[in-house]
Amino acid sequence: MDKIYHFLMLAGIAIYWLLIAGITLRVVLKRRAVSVSLAWLMVIYILPIVGIICYFLFGELNLGRKRAERAKEMFKPFGEWFLNLNDCQAHLPETMGAPIYKIDKLCNHRMGIPALSGNSLSLQNSPNEILHSIIEDIEQAQHNIRMEFYIWHPGGLADAVGSALIQAAKRGVDVKLLLDSAGSPRFFRSHWYKMMRTAGIHVVQALEVSPWRIFLRRLDLRQHRKIIVIDDSIAYTGSMNMVDPAFFKQDSGVGQWVDIMVRITGPTVNVLSAIHCWDWEVETGSRMLPKIPECQLDVNIPQHPIQVVPSGPGMPENLISQVLTLAINQANESVRITTPYFVPSADLLATLKMTAQRGVKVELIIPQKNDSFMVQWASRAFYGELLQAGVIIHEFYGGLLHTKSVVIDRQFCLVGTVNLDMRSLWLNFEVTLAVDDEEFTQQLYWQQENYINQSQAVSDSLWEERSLGHRFLERLFYLFNPLL
Image (cartoon, rainbow, N blue to C red; front, side, top):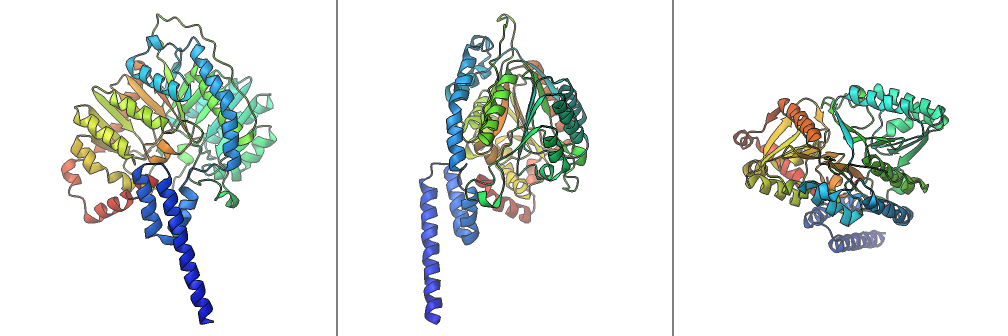
C-alpha cells in the first residue's frame, strides 16, 4: 500500500510540474506585454494550484471556437459597411482639426471607421435627467430600439425605463436588449426579464456565464458597452449603466455612483447602431445592418466631427489604447482625466508622466473610495511617481465617480465606457467617442471642475508620510496590476 501511495505521490508531482512547464511555455510564447507575462508567471509559481486554475479561467483571450468563427464570418459585411462611410458626405477630413484628423487617420487605417461630421451632442450629468430623457425618447420611438448595457439593475427609474420599453413593444416597435450575463444577474432573476419577453422584447444575455463555459472563455471578458439607439436617429452612450443610483449598491460603502451620458443625433448614431448590430449578430447569429447615413453638409460651416472607437475581441487590438495615447500626446496646455478604476499600463503611465514633464498640466480625478479593494490599493501604488512627475491627483469624495472622460486643451475630448485599466484597454468590449466640438468639450471640462470641487488634492509631502501598512498593500496589489 505504501508503494502505491508513493507512486501516486510521485506521479502527481510529475504531472503537476509537467503542467507548470506547459503553462510556462504557453505564457512565454504568447505575444503580450512583458509585465503581463511576468505577472502570470508570478501567480502560477507563488500560488501553485490556484495560479494554474486562474490562468485557465482568465489567462487567455478565448471566445470559444464557434463564437470566434462566427465573429470572423460576420466581420466582412460590417467592414464593408464601415468603409462605405468614407464616401458619405459626413466624412470631411479636409475640415478637421489636427487632433481628430490624426485619430480619423488611425481608426480609418486600422478598422475602416472614419470620423463623421454633422452631429449634435447633449451632455447629461444627472441620473434623473438621463433616465427621464431616455424614457421620453422611448415613448416617441416608432420603428426600433436597440440597447446594450453591462448592468441593468431593477429599481427606481430603471423600472420606468423597463415599463416604457414594454409599452413600445406593445405598440409594434422592434425592441432588442443585449445585457452582459455577469453584470446583470439581478435583472435575469427578476420578473422584468419574463415580462419583457412576454411583451415581445428580444432579450439576450451577452457572454453567458455558466459552469460548462468556464474552460471555453475568459470569465472576466465582459460586454462593457453602454449604447442606446432609437429609430437610427437618436443615440446615447457614456459611463452610466441602466441603474438608478439611489437603488444600486447602497451597502457597498462608496456612496452613489456618479455618471454622465451623451445624447447624440446625426451620422454618428448609425455607427453606434452598427456596433450594436455587430454585437447582436455575434451573440445570436442574426444579421441586421443599419442604413448608411445620408447627409448634405455645408463644408463652410464648422461640423465638429466625432470618431467612434470600439474595441474588443474580433476588433483591431489596442485601438482604444492607441487613440488615448495619441490624444494625450497632442496636448499643448492641459490634460484632465476622470476614471473610476486607474491601473494603467506601463505605456500609458509613461505617457502621463512625460506629458506632465514637458510642461502640460495633467490632472487625474479618481474616487476616494472604490468598490474594488484590489484596484483601490493597486491604483495608489502609482501615486508617488505621478506626483513626482508633476501630475495633479484629486480624490473625489462625493460618491463613486464612474465617469470616464479625457479633456485635452479644453478643445477636444474623449468620453465613453473605457476605464484606465488593463481590462478596459486590452480586453473588454468597449466604446468611446473622440469629440472635436469645443462647446461640448467646455461643458465636459466644467463638469470635471465640479468633480474637483468635491475632491481633495493628494499632497506630495503627506503622501510620503503614509503608513508602512498602506505601503505594503500598495506594493502587494501593484504586482497584480497587469491582471486587474
